Image 1 (tube, rainbow, N blue to C red):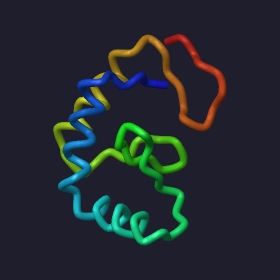
Image 2 (cartoon, rainbow, N blue to C red):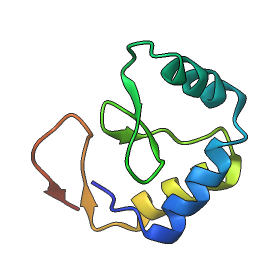
Image 3 (tube, rainbow, N blue to C red):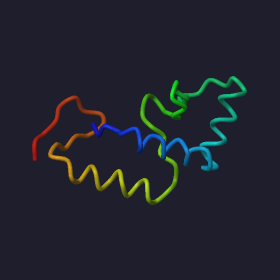
Image 4 (cartoon, one colour):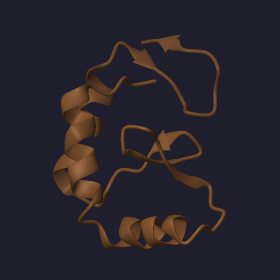
Length: 84
């Protein structure tokens, strides 16, 4: 699993505040609706424990580049890592 740095998480939180789809989820959460999406103690919106990445191409590119640079290849649903 990729570890997110504080700088990256701060950028994600800022971009989450401008993403229309995520703002709809935030409004539903504030109304008390039960969703899989939660806001953690750091203000990061997560769906089932995974960070909700806003629809910002730069953020997605950063995530993909980091995944390709990693020495380990994993699938989010698996419990084992395979060394490349």
